[in-house]
Image 1 (cartoon, rainbow, N blue to C red):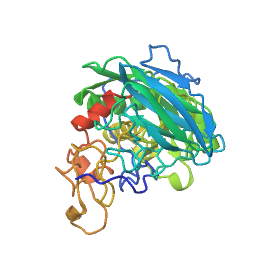
Image 2 (tube, rainbow, N blue to C red):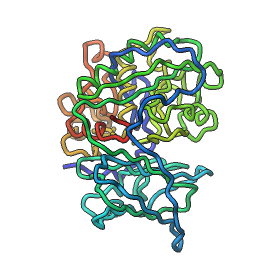
Image 3 (tube, rainbow, N blue to C red):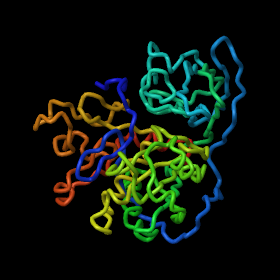
Amino acid sequence: MKIKLNFCRTAFILLTATLLLVGGCSKKKSSSATTNSSATTRCSDNSTSPFSVSEITQSIEGESYTGSFAVPSDGVSFLLSIFKDSNANVGFSSLTDPDGTDILDNTSTPNLYYDASGGLGSALIKNGYANVLVPQSPSFSAKAGTWTFKAENNDGVKLTLRSGTVPASTTIVVQPYITGTTWTTGDLSNALSVMSSIYSANGITLSIKSTISISDSRFAAVSGTFTDTTTSALVSQGCAAAVNLFFIEDYVGSWSGILGNAAGMPGSIGIANAWNGVLISLTAHASGTSLDAQLLGETAAHEMGHQLGLFHTTEEKGDVFDILTDTPECSNSRDNNGDGKMSAEECEDYGGENIMFWTPWSSSSRSAGKKQETLSSYQQQVLKHSPIAK
């Protein structure tokens, strides 16, 4: 059975390709290349968005901020986001659906108390920003009617709401960026093709825009902390109506060697800000100046999965799993070498092949043709219901 995620999911990060990923970030494919833009400005949202964004008026009741919003009869999904300008912790103490069920109460069945970053029971990073995504699993739905919430002291709550239908063919817009001078937009083509192919094989079409080259040298290497001033300035350039992939030359400081990390599970969706994107290190995917296109594509797909609300199927120690009932689990009983870490090799046929497994295959396994390219039906469902999908 699935175990609740009442543990520390604070990183969403991948370690270097020769090691393991720590917290959550990894890989996948893409078939349409995006390559030749040298623009240094933010992308333009020139396509029809499947969602609307509104700020919710709040009242103060005792020590809580309260508010409500209506989901229409054709509501598909929503992301309720909460902000704190000082980057202090922020979250919701309750979110009650039209039937009177508080889905952030750990006594409700089902609930997201431990799983939503905006839930008080979650160990996910919530400095300055947190959210609740509905549905984050098939156990939840964006029920029509009035939803109410109670929140901690904050500087704003916004609702990203998708309504309409869920088409048989789902499309998600992706906007890549590249920083630094070692690699150019053309160097990303094969990896983006890998990423696109992976999602296509799982029933999702990626509309990948031309890669935007950011020439400002400040952004060549940045921290993986999204509240860092430089990182925030970079990610805030992202497009509101797309999944923003920032291919940075490298991370700085203790982040060096990490493959990639996402702003959240999910991050911000539909709102341009410091949490509206993922970071992917090109240096961590390189041998000399040659990029490993398969691994880079898998990392981009993995981080995109996090940004849209997917968790690791199995965590590092093999004792915590995601909230979806149809994803493979690899328990620590399969830790054959006793190192306390579940490798993809130990979890072959038990989730090692899944896009959202916590760590990539070893270099020798990748050389032998091992890939991480699968999504379960419920993982696909979460992505297809995303507020940003259409």
